[in-house]
Length: 119
Image 1 (cartoon, rainbow, N blue to C red):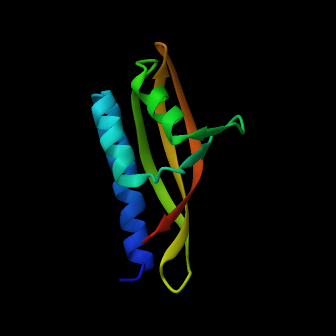
Image 2 (image 1 turned 120 degrees about the vertical axis):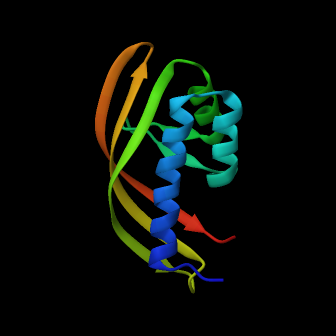
């Protein structure tokens, strides 16, 4: 099996949808299942502040109850670059993100980079 532009775009679309589904009715179990589906153990998320977040920190943050009503609305998959003989892809997408942090609503436009690997 090799990655294609279409399969990577579908992956990103499903990731954003699953994120929003978790955010509608969050629970530690839902966020862990979502993370198990999409993130490897060495997953690293770079926050807007520039601070990195490991998978464990991501799960603690999303399961803490501090962040509620989290959702992403996909605007576009801006680019997909297939490398490694079709086994790895780098994708950039933009989305609007909405959430409440400790009851205070926030919204932001985000540009995210995802590395997709078949291994």
